[in-house]
Length: 328
Image 1: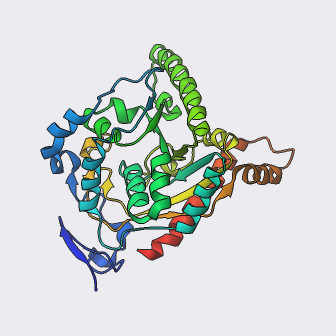
Image 2 (image 1 turned 180 degrees about the horizontal axis):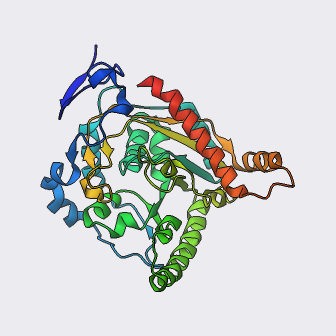
Image 3 (image 1 turned 45 degrees about the vertical axis):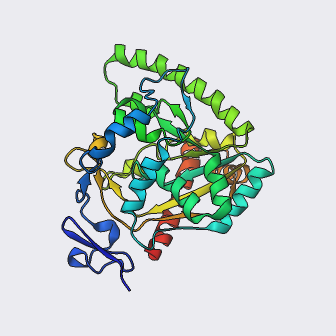
């Protein structure tokens, strides 16, 4: 039996990739701008959401570690639940069990996850709790996400939603690259150094407490037609060097799509119903992984070795994504 929902101009069929879509399109091929603006769909909860938020909207080196605000999670969970189609699931539970067991034995763990929307972290946390059994609940409770300042500083509502999860705030290198004015750039470079040095200190503290760091290696959400947004940032290699094991997590399906008519305004992202599959791949030993790649390059290689390592991570995630698309 197919579970179908009519939304905007599309008919979503959860148990079949193509039926109900224009011209037999599959789920990833649907028009990106279909759906309802986030600001429109959830305007009725804004007052209560902001009242529950801590509203730490200006980031400096003193507030870059932000513990989860339990008052926010019920708002976020309700949003996710009403947009997930039947058949949505978390796969790779044996890999999650293995990963958690090694964390509890004292290893430092890292989750490297694909990134398509601002629902990705909320969905990972939700899926672990809903579909991951006891191991999933324990792992969700240990998660600390690396998050760019934009989530806190650009929009008060987006910042409030982000408070549902524990985060270490960083100043992303991509943000500096976009600053053209030399005076402003110098000011922001100094600010970024302070913030990111403080972030590394908190990162170490979280590891020592047995928490699990979650990072989006692309550093930004993927935008169709812009392949650079799916390329990993070289800084991820530093996380690998400081970590024992990592868990690759792929995402198939997307309930919060970047708006084509206003892509820079996160509050105008489009909310859509979709069948979403999160999948955990095999646990990978960081040292073995890096050493194998670097040894294969040879002594004469003079390119960016860090980027080569991160490119391989993205290849793993892409292969995993393509494999699990069959489950949708």
